[in-house]
Length: 282
Image (cartoon, rainbow, N blue to C red):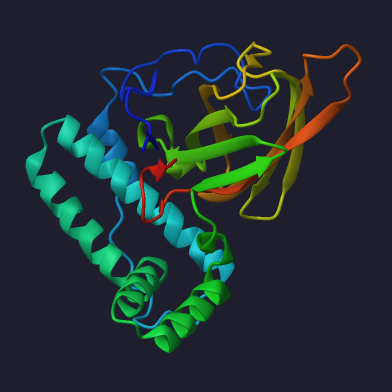
């Protein structure tokens, strides 16, 4: 069993300004450089962005997609403030932020309902689990989509895992940075080549962007039978939640004149809240 994770993920060190290698493989047209530099004034940041955990209603009533966006941004900002306080060795402030974050996680409806669903399933209270899931769907439909996906098309398997990168984000400015890792496994008996990519990126406001590009990370890899190809890239977003999906255009290279075909990339979430897992298994 092998897990696809972000261990050893390149160039994601907090507090350093580096260029992301080449264009983002999603083809978003950004040359992504970090906005944080060593020596950043952490105290000024906390003074300008100081917030407290918000109470959102114990049962998630009177919630809406817009309030979910606001809470998600608050959550991302709290986590970043905690990271900044710890980095600057302001431990009193870090402790305060830690407690605020714990309170937020206890009261935030999406996180609370996720926890209740998990507990209900473990106790085999499936009617309760279904009710909690309906509540979750009502207040935050984006949160039902996992931060990973897995799809197979004509023997070509595409697995994806996304993760929110706090150190490259600026929640107070509506800038959220997500990294994702893709594993493509050729389970067919024929060699294939990846020619082009197509991404559909949807933010939490429903804005949709279609992006096309040649290959991935500057390559058009050939994937032999029973082998795979992995790469990492990233997507900046203006909302704390969103989704990506798309397809790869490929062709078999063992026969001249072979027609190209599309391999699906199943939808996956971009979320500051994450989900229950940090890896997924093959």
